[in-house]
Length: 554
Image 1 (tube, rainbow, N blue to C red):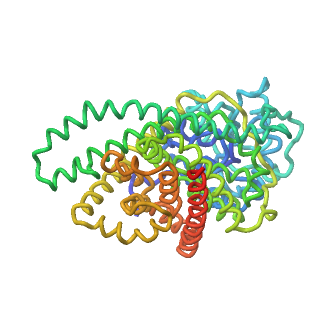
Image 2 (cartoon, one colour; image 1 turned 45 degrees about the vertical axis):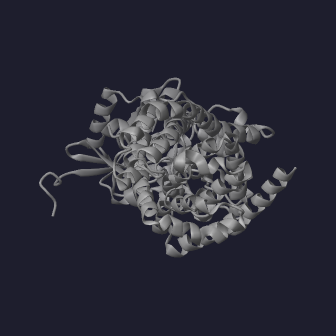
C-alpha cells in the first residue's frame, strides 16, 4: 500500500553511455554523496535513488555500452523500461554519434523523455543553437551543462525540464543528423603504439606505490611515539587488572594493543590510496590506462575495461566484485578470479606493511606486491577460459582528461574514511576480542597444533597459525602476527616472513569476499573459486619457499 507521500511521485531514470557524466549529475541534483561519481567507465554498478523534489525520485543506473552483454547494461535497460521518465544523458561533444546509438539501445516508445547534453564546457560555441536544434528535432526538452560544475540555475532548469518531459517524436530517432562536429578527447602518450603500454603500467604502479610508501613512512614514524606516550602508560595503568581483562585489552591480541597497530598501519594506507585512486578517476587518467593495457590483459583472458574492478580491489574486494558486473559475460569469472587472488585490499596492504615493518624487513613489500600480480595473472590464465573469445562493445567512449574536482574527491574520501571507521575497524576489533578469547581458552594452541603439519611443510613456525586463521576471516587479520609486539616475526628470517604473509594472503579470499562472490555468482562458482585459489596458493608457496631457501644459502 502506497503512503500519501508516495502517491503521485514520479521516477526518473538517467541513462547514457559510460563516462557521460551521469553520476556527477546525480550528485548535483540530489546532493547525495554517491561515492561513485567519477570520470571513468564502469564507475556506477548499482542503481542509486535520490529525491530531486518532493514529487520526483531520480535513479542513477550503470552506464551502458552499445551491443554489450554485461550485467550493468542489463540493469540499466531494465530500470529505464520501468521508469516514468527517461533522462537521456549524452556528451555534447559526441552527440551526433552517441545519441543515435543510445536511442537504438533504449526502448523509449511511449515514454516521457528529456535529453541532457553534458561536457558543454568542451564546446567552443553554438550551445543555444545546438540545444534548440535537438529540442525541435526530437520534440522533447533539451538542456546543455557541465555536470561537474552544476550551478543552482542548472538545477532549477533541470527540474523544469523534467516537468516538461514528453514522448520523442515518432521516427526522429532513425533520422538523426550527422553534420555536427565531434570534439575528440586529448591525445596522450598512453595511446602511443610503442611506449603507451609500458607507461600505463608504470603509472599504475606509481598510483599505488607512492601512497603506500608515504603511508609506511608515516606509520613507522608515529608508531614509536604512540607506544611511548600512549600504550606504555596504559599498560602500566592496567597492570593490576585481572588476567582475563588484561588479555582482552592489552594482551597479545588486545583491543588497545593490536587494535592500535591495526589503525596506525591501515588507516594511512586507506586514506592515501583512496586519494590517489580518486584523483586518477576524476582526472580520466585511470580510464586511459585501462584502454592502453587492453592488449596485454587479453593475454590472460581479460580486457582493458576489466582492469577497473581489479584496481578497485586494491581499495575493497567486495566493491570490486560488485563492479565486475560491468565486465562482459565472457570475462567476468576471470576478472573475479584475479580480484580474489591478486588485488590486495587497503586493509591487507596496511596489515602486510605492518607485519613486514615489525619483522624489520619493510622492503619485502615490493616483491610481495609483485608476486601477487605475477602469480595472480598466471592463476587467472591457467584456471579460466582461453583468450581470443572476448567480445568487444560496438562503441567505446574515450574519456576527457581534466582537472579533478575538489568537491568530488572530498566526497569520495569521506566515503572511504566512513567505510574504514564504521565497517573495517569494528570488524577487526571483534577479531581482536575473538582471538583474545581463543588464546585465553587455549584454542589458539589447538589451532597451532592442527596447522603444524602444513606450516612445517613450508618450514614455518606453528605459532604463526593465528595469522593464517584470521586472514581467512579478514585480510587485515594478518595483524595478529604482531602479537607480542612482533617478537615472533623478528625471530624469523626474511624469506620465512615473506612466505608466511604471501600464504596467509592468497590461501583463500576473506569470508566477506567469498560470501559476496556467492551472492553474485552462486555457491558452485564460489566453491570452485576457493578450491582453485587454494591450489594455486599452495603450489606457488612451495616454489617461493624453494627460491627463498636457495637465496638464503648463497
